[in-house]
Length: 543
Image 1 (cartoon, rainbow, N blue to C red):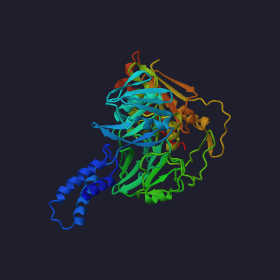
Image 2 (cartoon, one colour; image 1 turned 135 degrees about the horizontal axis):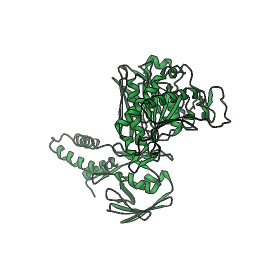
Image 3 (cartoon, rainbow, N blue to C red; image 1 turned 135 degrees about the vertical axis):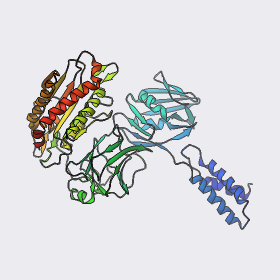
Image 4 (tube, rainbow, N blue to C red; image 1 turned 30 degrees about the vertical axis):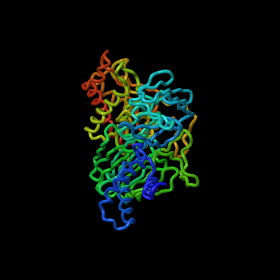
């Protein structure tokens, strides 16, 4: 029969039975703490068993509470958003493969140590304990670490997901290992941030999908935290603005979440648009005045949010409203329609530059090593510099390797109320520059009240678009750059409600690499900027 002391120790170990972030059962740590505390307690003069036990137990609790918190992997996909625990083995983070794939499809596993087999839909994966390579559909796959079997579970190194998951899923999977966030497919949500041209105390974020971040504040800062949304940041995480009230915003990721920290000299409030795609930050008075137009995201009940903290979920989850939760009373636009921007809508910048393609859409393969998406970003950055040097405020829609749909591009252009939208393309065939304006297709959609046909949104702006095209062509010809002006039924030009042109840049000679030459990029960007500047009065007068 065990002694009373042994029985007490066993019971106390049971109290601390749970798993820590490194996968070690904490009962072992609590046993160590208990023994260590006992040795200290023996130095204390015996003043009663209750006092000795209280000291011992308190010391053990302190040691256990100092253990590292459990780490999780946030997973974002079109099927589900979810969170999985990570365990550490051999100095690496590991995750259960079966648990990872289970929400995404039909999966089963069979453990026969040292062999472990997994079927996902029609794909077979074969793993061997202690090996750093696996076989998926009969082909070798690197794991970046040893495969582990624990209680029938197959554990793979977190770092192997980028190369291993596409073998099972048949599509892209992107792991952001520094923040433990996994993106499956083209699921990422992107954003832009613009200071209002007529009110430097208002900062507006536009997102490519509905968001519902938590909002918190501290002196000189407001923080938006995104745990449920697959948010990704711009190429440069630090955004600066020409505003003394809101001079900067910083994007970061950590522990399965994305954050935007806004630096401010005054307390700010956050308000949300009805579709959840726009978040506006403004001082309390301004935010209150605009709360009638910036209301809640779909499926929420909350008013415009002040900079008081709101609770964040423990992990990503689908953003569908809970049963019984009130829905937004705002009706969506009719199919194929979009609201016409009011004539009094503030212009948030003069020009929108859209670097075409991006992400897994590489555009034209200009050479074996040169993709169109890279050339368009380089031109966009130069054109922005040229326009802003002429006093025209400019926003680059894609300033990183992001994948934006055509609808997203048109949405951003329309909600920003810019005077002109400029899409940039690059080509290996021909020489010089081709400038396109919209050729509207035949459509049976008619405007309905406040809603404009999506396929013919450009109709009222075609004269301005043609004027911008002619002005840019004139400036290019002054520099003896071959140029052609064309019309075509292009998207997203057809869906943009302001003046819109597409500029396709080809090399000046037979060598495609000339597209990367700084002198050539500067020549074209300068001419385009001169053309827009020459017609700025007509463009700026448009509603």
